[in-house]
Image (cartoon, rainbow, N blue to C red; front, side):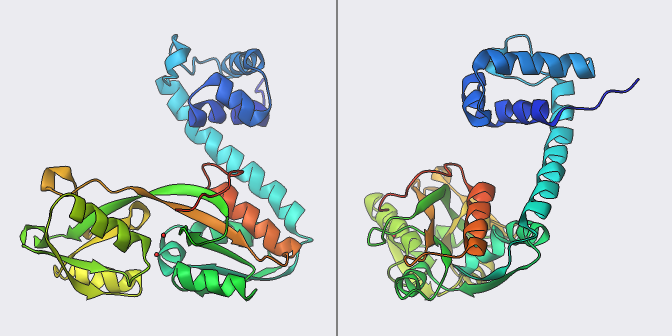
Length: 295
């Protein structure tokens, strides 16, 4: 006789893998460490396989554990989508979401697709422009919520995640070998630009701005054509670019902060649902608040 897999046990299993420890997994799912250990034992008994190597402190998955992890993630996704679909069916309204075009292109499509599937009566209007312009629009209460790159002058927002910055050049070209180094950057006020110039200056490298673009499409055009080196968030790296690092003579770059802002006058239930959905889907520290940090 076949037995059904317990969603709660699968959620605990995935939490252990994602957090890297029994104690941290317990905090995530609201259980004590002994309870977590007991749940994994039950799951192993249920499937008749060992999921972790005997030294569980290292949290090394067995081959069977790796296979189950794929099924567990898929089952949790379907389970959560089903619950969200019925929970969100009664939520309706219009939400204006602001974000730079880079995030709209590279990290939000699947998130918005999943949200629209579970909240079919919420209409989302996207406004894509640079973070400094979005922040000004937020101050005028023209946008309900905005996913932006943090800057020191911004009011505090919800920290969603840190995104590494990387140096990039086009495949089939070597602009990084030229001196001064040709750069494609966003206009003044950009965090990417500020970090790039500060890092090059600290490393004593000569540079020259050859292209100033107001969008990721403009930066990509200069990079793909081999005209310049640029700085992207790692999420925007595509097969047509090469990563440049310390082995290529380029200094290490810091990470940026992605923050979520809500309209100061308050937002609708539909907008709050979308804000929480984005934070959960993208976030590494969902409840944290952003610090001052400057796309």
